[in-house]
Length: 107
Length: 175
Image (cartoon, rainbow over all chains, first blue to last red; front, side, top):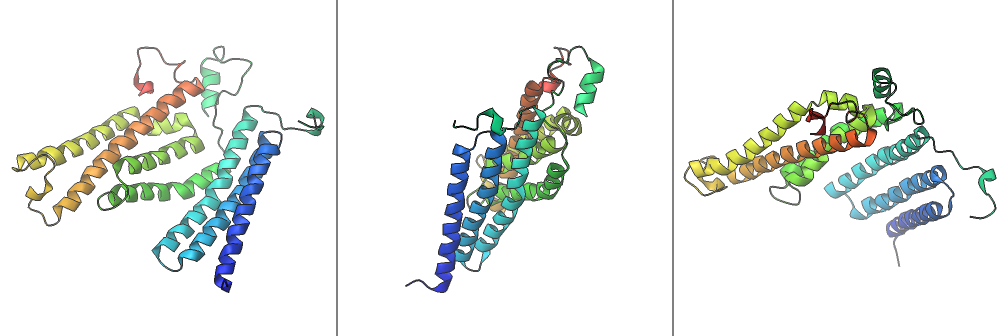
């Protein structure tokens, strides 16, 4: 029988795994760089964030938890910025965004 | 910034088909993030360097982490302006300081009558720990300087600037 605390950790972990799977599906199925960056960065940030939150909750109070929370904070800052930098560089290089006219019927 | 310089300097040399040769265009989001994150990354690199004395970590990992700060600055503010700020002479001097520190730690103990890197002979309390930390700091300075130099060399090759504009005898840009 899991306690409420363990149940919360499991729920956080399950959410992290779910968003990780969503990111993987988006990376594989979406058609071009911009949509892939969109799918991967948003869900990946949340997936890693929820997993790290579960780890922080599981570690309890102490120095490791502080380190995990710091990791969480910097992940939330840097991950969207990296996605922004990649897509911005792609836009500067002149890569056209995918539209439905480019072949919306299957891949 | 660098695009204007190459455009004004030798407009004919720049390929007409690709007017924007620079990989890095200044973005306020990236600049703000780098401003926030860079000091923490630098501190974390130093932490890894000093941590190598008694647990996981060390000069090589810490040096690479510290050099990441320069890479981030170059991504955010442009490679050319960052290279001008961190001049090649300063990088060479930095690597020289690192080599001097490491050699001093090694040969200094020999001069005091011990073996190579035998810190016990130095008459300072707990010098073994401080000695290892200084040694790791020297390694970190060398590694960060060399990684930064390699990055600038790669960036000069990738953007085409600096390698095309520069006359072949000038080797400084390829440091």
